[in-house]
Length: 244
Image 1 (cartoon, one colour):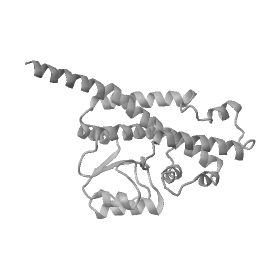
Image 2 (image 1 turned 45 degrees about the horizontal axis):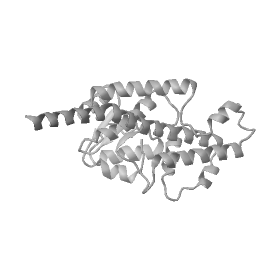
Image 3 (image 1 turned 60 degrees about the vertical axis):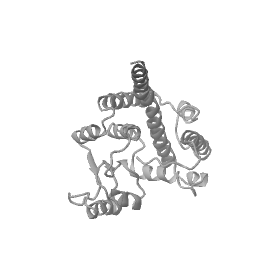
Image 4 (image 1 turned 120 degrees about the horizontal axis):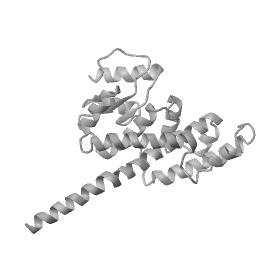
């Protein structure tokens, strides 16, 4: 899933500000039409990014599954990509895919399905550079796409979380919602664009932003659990070597 970086912008602060604005606009535009309970509206006040009830439980399950997978394949990106393929998700690694990804505004990593003419053209582009040998379908499958070199493990942690969230059916991954999510990183995107969204589009965008924040928070968690112990071990080994 695409997570472009804005120059001199902290993603966390940016997301919090945007989510708060979505909530504010939502309650102004749809105060009575929404049919939501007071508790649900309170949950839309995004001073907290936690999910509630069933969504919170599903997030815990995503974190556990992703953590278990990454602990098995830590420092082994190639093994991780093979595991993804065994789970039925297409993995493409080709030196020329960058041309296609750039043309369609995508980044390397997990790419959710794209349908219609854009999906067909995307597969045709992959075929032209030699990265796709299957028939041209009306809709692309969910897949991981990378260049020739293996991606950094830190980036894979972020993308794996999205992959599992998508597979478990968490909201925020519909094609229209993903397109709206990408738009918020456009320098010309403004709050007027949010105001022009429908009620459903606002709520779906909120879900997509929440998914990406959950993935970013998971990266931090894994760094503390997996990288920190490795640094301690490295430090101990270096100290031992100096004493020999």
